[in-house]
Image (tube, rainbow, N blue to C red):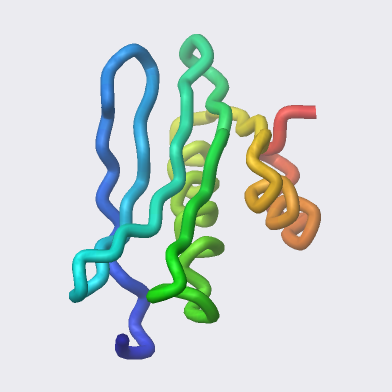
Amino acid sequence: MSNTLPKIERKDLGGGKGRYVVRGPDGAEAEMTFTSIGTHQIIIDHTGVPDAFRGQGVGLHLVTRAVEEARAAGKKIIPLCPFAAAQFRRHPEWADVLKQ
């Protein structure tokens, strides 16, 4: 994979659920799933990055995308996923979208 960040697709799955997906050339998929709570909050409940993407920052890229979209929409994020929660601890600049 090149140094450019891979394209992220957002899929709405209905019922307030959705996912962000990065697809690799070999068909591997990295994903982060979320659930919308009302109109002002989302829960990040899972991040899965297969070995094909390890060490490339794809998981962080997925969480960053959710942070950017939440910020633009005036939403707060509840990071229930351990990976996403760890990223919020490492990125204090995201505090404005973190649900306290």
